[in-house]
Image (cartoon, rainbow, N blue to C red; front, side, top):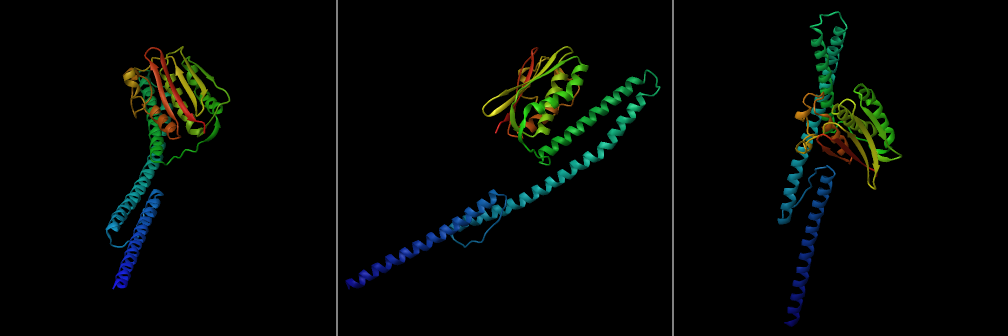
Length: 301
């Protein structure tokens, strides 16, 4: 009798061990399936797998349904992005020629023998056409950046070469306004997209020249740190009040003190998009009546 009890106990223990092993195997298999699906989801592949009906697999089932829904959302997002890309391309293409023609005809009209009282109207027409052209170009660039149509290609570049080109483009505008534009740099290097970063710095130079009175000065200086290269664009213009400094990088923001200045209020917004899109950042230091300094920090690695 004791032998049967011992055998029965051994059988029970063995059966319990087998059940535990089977349950652990099933649990491990389900967890591995969930782990695989999560890995694929991280990569952007929202796939669902087969599963059996158990308590734990219900979690797997919910995850599978979530991934299926995410796959649909991801596909819809790609489709919407493609539509936006096509729309931006259409706007850029369809508006470029008409605006260029309006500007051309206005300039030709200005050269004609027209009554003096009409000349200010033609001058205003040219100015508004140029403003519209600049606005559409800025909006197209911003839309392409935000939707990922334009991609940055940062690599190690010499900062001086990029800055020298940007300063050269804005020297005529500075001279016309009798503003002294200077560049002080060294052999600094950083990781950035040369074309886009030059445009960002150009926006800062344009902003500084616009807000600096005739006879003032605008300077560009470079400083090197362990992780960042700092580019300062400084002016001795009217400055920006503290309560407005957080707003100047917003889209279309125009300071009340600069309401009469040229521009559409999108240059600084676009500049921040370009700099942050490359892993850098930008900050503003300013005091009313003393001028402003926009500091761009570009990663060195």
